[in-house]
Length: 330
Ligand code: BYC
Image 1 (cartoon, rainbow, N blue to C red):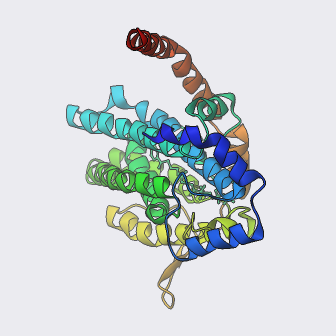
Image 2: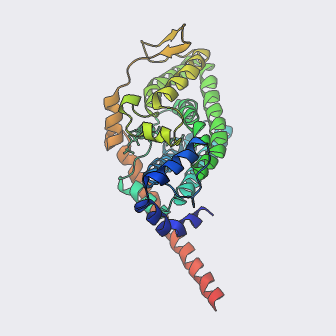
Image 3: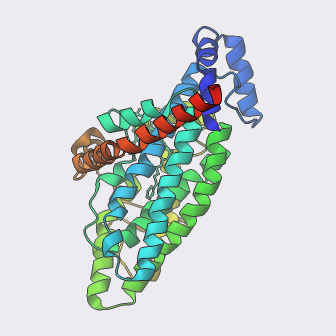
């Protein structure tokens, strides 16, 4: 369905190439200001299209690469029930990637180009998926913290100005809520278990807390895209605002679990009702997004291997499509 947008590529390039006149830009901004949705066949500035392709493709890649850290535990889930839930969750992430790739294709870029950029290492994906999952508690911490951060970021994207992206986020957010609850329930079970289980939960929180805060992106002062993306209502809140909201809802959840958030500067500001928290290690964030995280290499190798091993499926689908087309032509 979404690939129908591909036949608009030439027209779209023409429309965005020469025609970004002040008048057209003003009319476009007026539509955004009136909270109208922009649809694939509508005129849009070239830079709006480029920003969306960048953000949406990175988002889709994150969903797909995000299957790997948790996928690591499918064969080692502690019970049949946990295994069934984890399988469903990881499959949901694949679905999210596919909806968002589909929505990105409506902007006139092909799935093959997007995937090639991921596999070559040219395209970014979320920093969080470059950390290892070394114990079962990491599966709980990912659901609780990573999916929790993802919901905080994605609920406002349901109101994004670009229609296909906004609509794809509605189902994604419903599924992410279930993911967050299952992760929290794993943490709760561990925290009510033996001393050793509680230590595993604490250790996972210590390793995932700061990387989860980094998911929201650089601080507002260093966020190169935020101002324009907010003016276009692609983003509705700044990176720092969403990070603060996440801290405010998550700290009481950690307290309920009886776990300690690994931040000596964490303190509730009674006047504002917000938690003050310590400085994020931005050098670590920069290193991770530049390919120097613990698992960057492993993640790209895994995606490339899966792509190579799936070649026969693509070839078979292509051969079948050609056979059907030839039969119809005859
Ligand atoms: N990691 O100007 P800024 C999930 C880059 S998956 C890597 O603030 P923007 C899940 C940014 O791209 C959920 N790179 O950018 C799946 C830019 O670089 P470029 C993933 C990051 O776009 C499986 C530069 O830093 N969610 O939920 O305005 C299992 C400057 O940043 C990161 C999404 O993708 C990062 N964390 O704001 C479990 C949500 N942060 O492109 C769970 C959609 C920043 O100029 N994306 N960068 O080279 C967004 O909302 C926005 O793109 C961001 C960044 C808030 C992430």
